[in-house]
Each structure stands twice: as C-alpha cells, then as structure tokens.
Length: 277
Image (cartoon, rainbow, N blue to C red; front, side):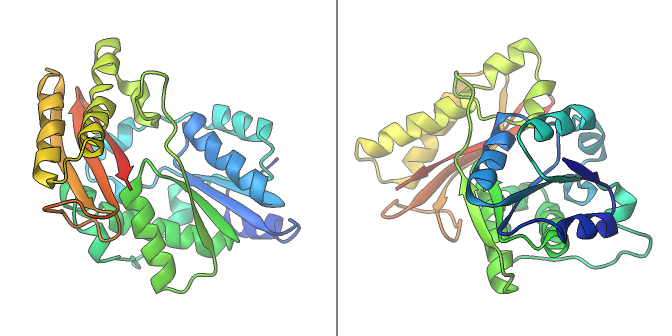
C-alpha cells in the first residue's frame, strides 16, 4: 500500500493504478463499518483508494473536532491488511491552503435534520467531498447508509454538478447489541455504551409499529420518543419520519420513508436510521 499526503503525490500514484477505481473517503479511526466500505470497493473495482482526513469545516463545535478520535498508524495497518492500493492522508493545510475561499452548498436535502441541528455541517461535507472526488476521480465512491442524509447530499452534489462517478451505498454495520458502528462510540463510558443501544431500540420499535399497520408519522415519532424517554442518559436532539427522497417530514407514510434520530448520550452525539420500504 502506498501512503500519500499531498495532492500531487496522490495524482502521480493514481496514474499507475488500473481502472475501474473505487474510493472510500473516511475521517479515520476505522472500524468494521469503514472496512465494509473498503471490502465493497475492492470487490467491484480493480483498484481501491481510501482517504483519511478529519475535516474541520464540518464540525460546528471546536471541542468536538479536537476530541474526534485519531489513530493514523492503526488505520494504515488495517487498510494495508485489507489490500488497499493507496491511502491519502493529507493535513489541513493541504486540503485548505492559505487563501482557500471556495465552498459548495447543496440545498433541499441538506436543510433539515442534521443540517438544521448543525448549521454549516453539510457545507463542510459537500466541499471536502467535492474536492476529494475531483482529486481522486474515481469510477465509484462508497458511503455508509448510517449517514443517510449525508448520502443524499452527496448524491445530489454529484447529480447537480454532473460528476462522472457512481455513488454506492453500503448498509449500516452494527454491533451484536444493535448499536450502529461509529468512531465516536469509543468516547462512551461503559454505562453510556449500554445506554446507547436505545437508539436502535427506538428505531426498531417504530419499524415494528409500521409493519403492524401504523401509517401516522407523528405516532411513529411518538413511539421513538417513548423508547428514548425510558433511558435516563438519552437526550434527544430530534426524531424524524421523513420522505426517503426529499427528507421532508411526513404527516403519513405511504411510500419509502426514513426513520432517523440524533441523541446525546453523555458527551457524545450519536445518529442512526432505518429505511421503511
């Protein structure tokens, strides 16, 4: 595996790789969720590139950025073992050099949910993903379904700007107790880690209610709120039942929809979702 830290070095390395090329952008501190993306990319492409960059422009709180877990040596070992061809690990100055003043804003799907709770977050996401896709120029790029709104934003970005890349979604990877895998999980204490399973329990309870015939979006939200209320350590930011395409909140569910929520467990903010089809 090659490790590149500059755009120029990466482009030189990419020139020698066979196509098609699969790309997995990450913020590092890799877990099995990330590695499921890498495996999907390796299975469908002749070459695989992974980026590791903790993107400061998508963090609203400086403390959250500072506390985001990092272990680049471990990450590179995991990626080498997974057969990745090139890892791109730039520093902040490489991605945002002096004088950088260009940003990408995606409307519509970016405005609710995480976009409302974290102003500026998706501007940072869209900007860094656009730059990475421009630098890597992959045939396919891989993202996890756990970040469902991010996935929708990136699909819109690629479609609107006519980027020649296929966006591939990979199902959420979960721990045996149902907690969605996340780099932030490492910051949970043992009691907080046990409490965090309430997110998946709330989603499953609403999904079960839907499968039993409930179609009122507000009643499905209430099912999730009741499950969260039973966990003393859970502080919900939002619960949502939204149209799967537009991500607008629904009154009634009569087509594909997304159940999603954001919950603070101690100092850690977690998100999760389940698609209703």
